[in-house]
Amino acid sequence: MPATHRADSDKGLKPRLETAPPATSPARHCRRKHGPAVFRTTLPKYRFREPAFARLPVIMSNGIFRPLIFWPFFSRQCYNPNPLPPLTGSSGFTMSALHEKKIGVIGLGYVGLPLAVEFGKAYDTTGFDIDQARVEALRDGIDTTLEVEHAALKSASRLRFTHRAEELKPCDIYIITVPTPVNPSNQPDLSPLLAASRTAGQVLDPGNVVIYESTVFPGATEEVCAPILAEYSGLTFNRDFFVGYSPERINPGDKQHRLTHIVKVTSGSTPQTAQLVDELYASIVTAGTHRTTSIKAAEAAKVIENTQRDLNIALINELAMIFHRMDIDTEEVLKAAGTKWNFLPFTPGLVGGHCIGVDPYYLTYKAQQLGYHPEVILAGRRVNDGMGAHVVQRVIKKMLSKQIHVNNADILILGLTFKENCPDIRNTRVIDIVNEFSEYNANVEVYDPWADAGQAQREYGITLRSELPSCHYDAIILAVAHDIFRQNGPALIHEARKPHCVVFDVKRALPRHLVDDRL
Picture 1: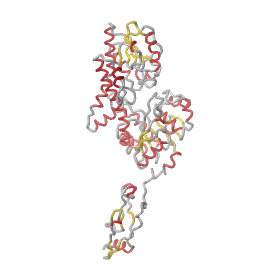
Picture 2 (picture 1 turned 45 degrees about the horizontal axis):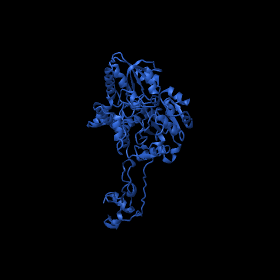
Picture 3 (picture 1 turned 120 degrees about the vertical axis):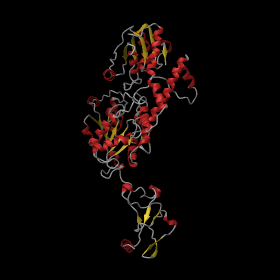
Picture 4 (picture 1 turned 135 degrees about the vertical axis):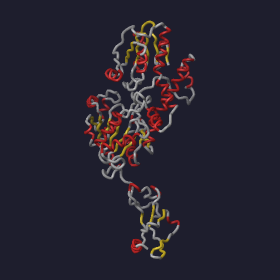
């Protein structure tokens, strides 16, 4: 027998747990907890798996058969000299110290600010935004998005704002909440997300966690963002730093479904990180959390939430176009169908904003990368993206029936924001109506007391009307159902219209007898 085996036999055959390097030992734990444990003697070629009490093996040593001596591992617990590693070996980051951690929120828009405020009530929180004017306004207690009131801003006593990235350095957990739009070709535009990842990477320390809330295609967090964090920090992903994903569910302008009242989906790049992310959000979200087993699952859940809604609205929009040809009022049909308990209450209209009109393109982009061409999702997008042109065509037909020339006609559009009672004009599809009328050389004006005039000029080159002239417009289109339009719309339209004006109601917010046509 080789000398090494003779030396082993001289020491006796005391069994021990087999241990492997932590990074490559998936089977080093007890079966009842983490999978089967592997036992062996000091002779490597003789091994068997627990439970070993089913038989009593013997091991030959120096030509003599000897019974194997067992340690007392028959109990419900087995000794594990190599437990699961902590979240990081270098920083000592543990769940018990969660309440001591400092949080940095990158991006202070509709999603980031409410999140920073809630965390700022319980944690030392730094809110970062590249817009210095935005930061200064928040320091003065002013939120131009109208999502957070002055009193709520002041209640976050542990929250501070900055536009200097270096002031994020003391943070342990970073939460990225920047927009993820699409480009003119309806392809994902990840430039804000990549820039935010570079910012986080430059201040990242060993043991830090970066959580993403922005809508992305499945796989983006780990395949696109994590490598950037690694590149700019010089750290190794899932060894020195970790990532999580918890998709935002903010509904701008909705004062009922707030951050703390909506269940939060959570996930992490390792089981320990997933637990950390889940407990972090559970500490501020009273509605509770739902943890997924992977980041991809959480990313996919977010992207299909709005894809499903987009398709449902597309169906109703297509039905509205069909019923128009049949000379049937769509609203009456929907009310009748809604008397059935399982009929879903969707209505026709323009589909814009930063979620419903964008998220489906992130999913279809990834599907096409994988060689699958999604037909239903893209069909729904085509229907919804074409609603602006559909509205214009119907208005023009009504104008011609009243012998109103479209060329050089004065058109008034009521509303520019992507939804009612909200100042957000991102990806508003009202712009489709404006552009379509411009193709006919019409003079288009927009009136919206909710929208910011400066932002409208920068984003779309539109000069908003601050007041309306009397008896001036050949056609008036109610595009956004702000409460002010519901309440004062009839009087406003009566004052601004010409005697033979066409009135079109996109949102069915006006009395039926006051309009010439509606969706």
